[in-house]
Length: 383
Image 1: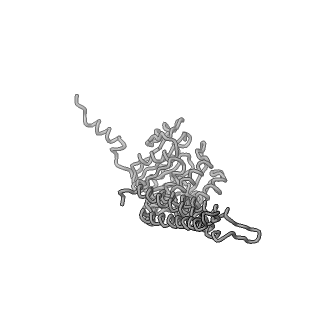
Image 2: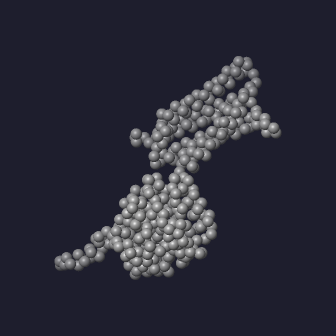
Image 3: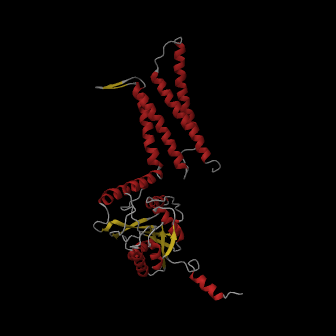
């Protein structure tokens, strides 16, 4: 029995994959937003009509147990499922399913006005790579943001992100954004929680994206908030530290190593007395500890940095030379101590200070030497 080609053609035309790709994809994460999802979809349609571009609305359901999915489908949205819980997981699934050249993202809780999405899309045609709807530059409805979030959490996280990555964004935590889908594909975002929002800005900054903010209105949400202030704040900070080995490893480690070495060298000739302050070999031991730990932390920073881009200033050969020189200096100092002991006919020894210096140099030298080989193993065959 043959099948008529007409129904097949009709079925193909109704398939999302067969339809022409839209200009804009509006992506909304959703977890139990039955009270607002339909209204957000309706407002997004208004925004697309005002923009004058073709569009689609993709709802990324993150395991809703209410009528959210049914209401989204009834409102004409396309629903994709993100079974792994988390803000970032939902967006990654939704954007992966989006087909538009431009993606507009925003929460499905009625806090952002999707009817104004044209204000986010227009700057992309003027050279912007990421457009962020800034709540803090715009209007925050009374009671829409808790005091702790508005005046402490968001400004603090924005300050740290701007300091670490050279951006100048006032509201880094805004979830109302627009970007090109092709550009997003190069970011390789990995976070699954609320920190995904910060990770996008960090990854964009590392790729040289031009980011602009436009003021938007932020309204009262309906339903239960999924944000957990301290847990999610820590996840944001943790992600930024892991993306910035300079601030997590190099700066504190380098400061410790230099301070420790300076303490050892200053006390090498003898104790220091300044008024009631008396510093002796105990502080030399502290200096030795700081120098050794600081060097180890710096080397961890080199490894962390090398996961993405090997540092040009640290190569296997340079590391081996530095490690060998430091170890040889420590070994020479120990040899001098042994020589003086032999010259004294193996009598009592009182050379604690040079011994501490020798121990420090040999320990630091050995760390640098073997860490350099480890770095070489990480990039074996890449040069």
